[in-house]
Image (cartoon, rainbow, N blue to C red; front, side, top):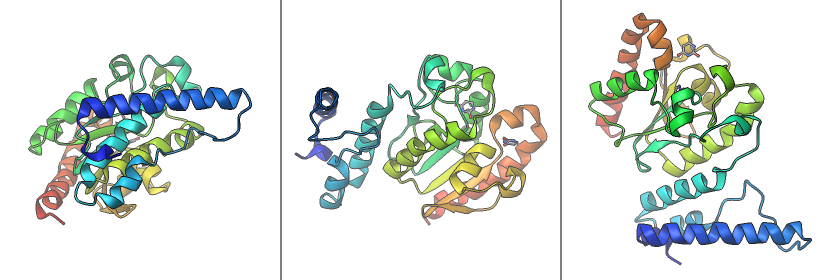
Length: 246
Ligand code: URA
Ligand code: URA
């Protein structure tokens, strides 16, 4: 079946059917049938298979993989943060974006709305994007952690270890040209380093062959407005690279 060129409605109906099918198979397994083992990590082969065939429309496949991932993790209970959330905050924006911004974890507003960066730090992020000549529709925005840590505490190493697979799948699905890692957690997680953000920022890095620019987190800028100058320097590097088509 050609999932890549399907109308949206049909595509979503198909995904719904696949999910229902998966649920039935999971039930069967619970009842002792062992013909198929649908682990949480199993990627549906639709788009990876279709991608190599339909090389002319890989972008379409990417977005579908993202939608599929969103469905797959919508009821995630892999860590205790899932029990306290109002909403899992998957990500927003253009699934074919050239630029992906990765934050830390949802806060109160994000948990309430199910959308990343909608609180005060988010408003600052919108202004940064605006200054870059971009809007939310041009980019894709997500976090390392998909569910709100209580009282906005730092994400725990185990929570990051559990949730980062979803971020990696998102980035693999989108395959942007550039990633901006907002703050320590995004930068250290994606680059697998313990280096402080103050040393990482402003220097191009590479994540899975994708150019990555670490910069300060907007919430940090709210507390330390002097850092805005640094972030703007970093964003200028990003804009140059976006324009250069490199
Ligand atoms: N801070 C983040 O890192 N992510 C959000 O979504 C909101 C605030
Ligand atoms: N600490 C963080 O976690 N992020 C920043 O951007 C700056 C300090």
